[in-house]
Image (cartoon, rainbow, N blue to C red):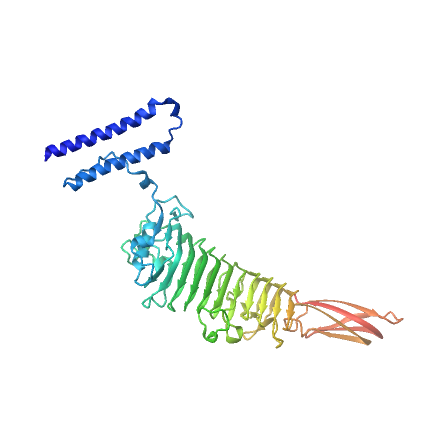
Length: 505
């Protein structure tokens, strides 16, 4: 037996030596082709040599002997360039959705966190380098939220499939949960992130996490995505349905961008017989500096709830629940410091509510089906508000395009509020700038602006002109401004046209 093994070793050694000498001869024997002998060709031949050696070792292993490779042997080149795309089916995830895939998906995410780091993003946030969790177009059933194994990391993508909550999914959970309290240990158990090798000194949990091309079905148990105290999170091309709490919750942190997505508690295209019973919030922003762009919200009690400053909404189409049924398209619940811009959006039978608006801009948007804007007094403040260049279309029921809710007290600090240049059909126009004209033969002319002006008993500026057709040149003056009416008087009676412009800003 020993002679046979020795003979095999000798044969293997001689063959390997022969191949190596052929490589050397090929390089040194033909000087005209030395320049053409590329590094790639050299590595390819070395790979073939390694494979041949491995096949000889494998034969000896089959015969009952184990041969350890030489410690100096270099690993195959493929190992040095291993893919950092983690295919979840290789971890046992079931793409048919018949069996629970929670553990397999979380294991794939945990392995992505073991990727070699590429330095830091924000101070204290490790750059994972861009590993991808590829759902491979599958439909995966999960009974617990998908969670990142530790805080203090970034540059990771989860994409390309469907996640569906099982009947055992926690009713207050989120299918994808990006929060510090949800960080899990390497054993897969919930625990403190301080035990993790990626424990962070950053004040933020995560940075640059991308959730893309996903369909999330909450199965009427909890919500879709939770992003807590994170930076520069991207939610792109997602379809989130059947949530009971929030489709997307953003709490703390800033710069979460939600784009090209569709959200609805019930899958409908409008006119749903159960619309009165819609509940939940499609997007709940409890943070600053976020953007919602090109998003459709087709069923929920509230489309977007914003209680953080400096958010931007553009290209949003809300037909989540009609105002007449108690729904709200966009609710700005941050009295005293709104700092929100709503542009180029479509409020479809559902409107906008803003509490004590301060620095609010709404423009270039379309309000259909008697949808309107409601300014709600909490502490009586409205400052820096512009509602301009919008279109309103209604059903001739006398609904005003902008309304006031002063049930908790009147607006008393009103500065720089401009409601003007809106295009209105089938609704009653309201504005802070109004123009009126009156004609008659007399010495007193009154113009009543109450049907148009937004705020009661408030006119800050008046401009007028009086044109007389007679031969007299009367003296005239502005005599009274009260209850949103303007009185112009002359010293003599004359036939005249009076033109008046007033401004509440």
